[in-house]
Length: 312
Image (tube, rainbow, N blue to C red):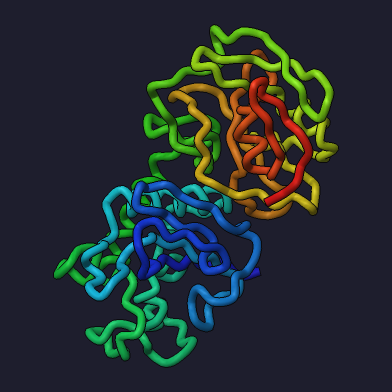
C-alpha cells in the first residue's frame, strides 16, 4: 500500500467550530485537538480528489468577511504540528519523510505542488491557481508565502523531540502519540483506596490527591465486556469491539514528565489514542470519568457511579 498523505487545512470558521465529517481532527482556538474520526478511515471531502488513503487535519480559524480577523493562533499551529508528529511516529515514518510529498497544506495540494497532478490548479493565485483554496499559504497576514515549509519545520521539530519508550520534557507519551503532559500534577503516589459502583457491582478504585477516581483498565473493560489485547511494542491496550465509537477528544489525563503511561486505542492500523492512563505498581489505570465520557457510558453522582454504555 502506498504511503498515506496528510493534508493541513483551516476551516474558514470561528475558533470554536468542530463539526464531524469534514476533517479527522480539528484544533480549536484554545489549542485543543478534537479527534473526531479514526485515522484509519477515509473521509469524503477534505481535499478535492485526494481523500483516499489520506487524513485531513484542520485549525478552526479564518472565518468571517475578513478571514484575518480570526487568524490561526500560534497555539493552534503548535498543536496541529504536534498531532501530525504523533501520527507519523505511530505510523513508523522517519524524519526524512516529512516532505511536501507526504504532508501538504491545502494550498499546496490544490496547486499540485507535490508533483502529482491530480486536478486543475485551484490553489493560490500567486501559484497560478484560481484562488479557491489557499489554506496556510501564509501563517500570518501579509506574511511570507511559505506556510507549508514553516509547518513542516515545526512538525520536524516535534517529531525529533519525541523519545520512543519514554517521555520528553514536552510531555509526549511512549511512541510520541499520547497527550500533552501537565507538569503541575503527579501520578498515583499518595492516592487512597476506595470503591464505587459500576453497572451495579462494586469496583476497587484509587482516589488521587486531587479527588479524581482511577480504576484498573482491565477492570473497566471487563465490566463492559470489551475485549482487548496488549501491544507491548507500542505500550498500548487495543480494544476489540466493533461497536465502540469513541469521541477522540483531546486527552486530558494529567501526567507529569517521566511517569510511565499506557495508551488506549481501537485495534487495527493507526487508530488514534482514545485516552492515556498511568502505570501504577505494575497495573494500568485510567481516570474513570474520562473512560466513561470517551465511550458513551452514563454516569451518576453523589455518589459517583457508572451505569450503562449508551453511546453518543
